[in-house]
Image (cartoon, rainbow, N blue to C red; front, side):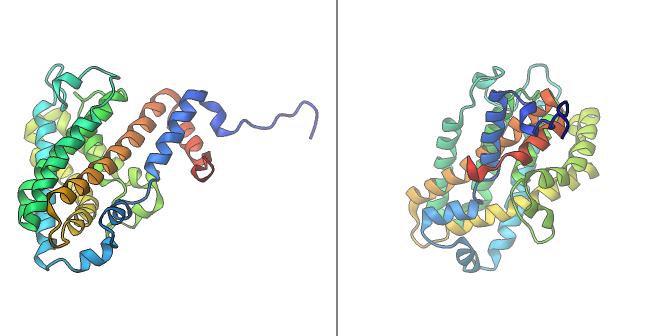
Length: 287
């Protein structure tokens, strides 16, 4: 090596210390244990075995309830799209960069979980759309706190895709390979759907691009809904444990949302390539 030669800077050196720390926290959140493992710790049984014990009708109920839940979230996004100052979050949380109301949303979802624990699978068609809409509002609140413009179609669809991050389906092997692969698998669908939403508004709700995105997100989200339902399938689970399961459920997606929108905020500052390289260079096992 000649005296005037220089080693290239490591990818993490391109970010400020504060932003690097934010990215490290984001990676921790995005690489957290799967929802099934978290639920197993609560109910004291492997979720896979609980899923196997569910009645055959449960799969159809989960699919139908998942589709209904995501449609309600999309309708919420479409109704607020394009209205000056409109946001798909509570009015008292609309200040940019203000901390998101995570605890308030957790409490609301715990309440719906208590009802689900009391009535079991029969409550799913009613409970899941309400729970998912509350979680969507929380995800939007987190996105807003990280500088996203929730009046734009792209930002609201990014909130919707959080439900598809980290979920695995038999038809989607890419979900096993990490955050950026899962995000990339959704990116093209988001781009096409956001263009249609921006030009057509509410009239875009039945468009091919939106339906394709919804199907992709639903395939992943339904896996995690099945895990949540299985955790509640224990006989005599009761309202208290039902509330705990729902709290874990929303906390999982809040963590993913915090990680995802932190990465997007840093990408707006440093560029996608720089943030991706720094993300890959961070070893969460050593942090």
